[in-house]
Image (cartoon, rainbow, N blue to C red; front, side, top):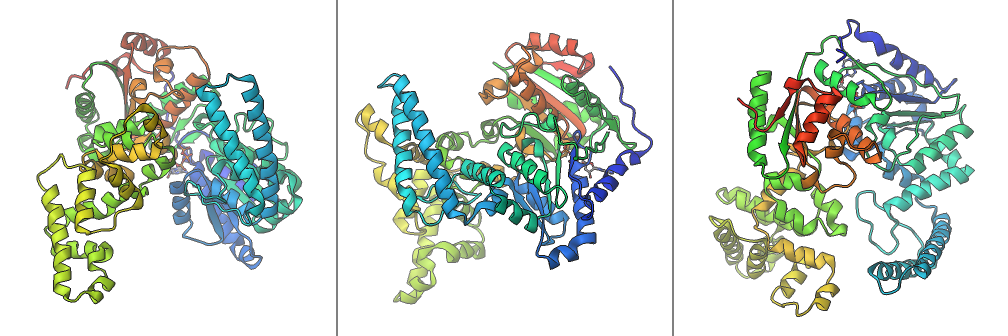
Length: 616
Ligand SMILES: Nc1ncnc2c1ncn2[C@@H]1O[C@H](COP(=O)(O)OP(=O)(O)OP(=O)(O)O)[C@@H](O)[C@H]1O
């Protein structure tokens, strides 16, 4: 095992930031591609570049009405960069979807014609498939429905005056564009419309893209085309790491065959991880581009342990608790015993839901495609009725001011107009109080109360206005479905809400913690760009039921294919989040095979691999 030795000179990569400053010189702009390993300070270099631009160019950019465009992968990353650049309006930070929409919004005629061609092509394609396929099958029924829906949309095009889009919603309106269309439209328009390229050049002479290994390929290709035409007037700067490409949207060979006028600075240090973690991620990376990182001078030795359990028959909660205790002893870091101080990475939201206790809630609503995004970001109205009104009210039951706050803000019984119209205001307020008492009476000491019980209770007292979708579900609650055909006719949405209403109300608390970002759990994919002192990575193919990633295959010496490669990249991302110590937990179908492979591939020392419950 090649040991990594910390560097004595942490300035090894300092020249990169200086070079970037030169590329940003408006008299000699040079586009660049800064690709480097995890924790090497790419985001830091991005912020340094922005600070430099604000300091040297801020005034002239403002005078010309220009801005620096920064494209981030997530909203959280966007907010972080906005914060780190002190909310300076000259820095326009957006996610790829907002950026794309800002380019094409208002080009209604061009959008219409683009959609006309695209929809026609799609319909022809589907019709050809239908002609070849078998009639009467599920696939055929879906194809026919798809054709009909595209034809309806086509017929509507001429009456659509203005196309609308929101980067943060499901865009289900008549005149809405969907997320994929907006990215493709922006990509196509930028490639084919010189006017749009000029608008972009005049508005944004600097375009910096973070996490560009995962940035949508249509937009990246268009940015390359844009840069090629305006290379002496603009700078496009791409930041990223191909080893951290974990979404399918990016450009696979990004960085290969870069135009010769692009600069390619790189960084070799890792400022985040301890030595042992860097040694591991260098090994993991060996199978791809062999880029090895060097620890910075202050890097501690650090700890890594790999725990392997059979996927069947293991009490996972107990195992994970024992691992925390073991890690606390091994690292002499008692924060491993503090739930809130350990970041636990799971593959699927379901794995967090099971561990936290909102699995029924998730299982009911997650399958409803139109609900999914809102469910995971905490903005789904049918759940938020319980989350934002009922839960805070119940929590405030012993605090009369707290109760009054919720009631005044949201109860129609205590609204200004209700009180004004009431003959007797005290009587009116007593009605609201009776509603509160009925609700608290139902919830107190009664863990089995379901969302439906709560909704009915509130509907009876009129304490809050029930969202329409819940009203629909309550209306149908007593009607039994008589046969399979009838069941088929019901929408997934209605079935999902019905299942949700049968779930115990108390699951909403754990759900609130998870979507509020306060849980110790996060997904493997969701922590890209972040860092935590103690990281536990849970790898459980069976529980995750995923088909994109398979840890059994990565650890068990399976064939080297796309799935193994993407799992290896995901593993690299998760391991490289650790600032101090790292516990890896694999629930394997064949622990014996995993054991032999792990011992053979040299990623871990024998004493770092633990089978079954660790001894304290
Ligand atoms: N030159 C430096 N001196 C001291 N600390 C640094 C330096 N560069 C980066 N860091 C620190 O190292 C950590 C990782 O930096 P950063 O998040 O910018 O890396 P990254 O390359 O964007 O990582 P990743 O690709 O893993 O998301 C941060 O805590 C950052 O403050």
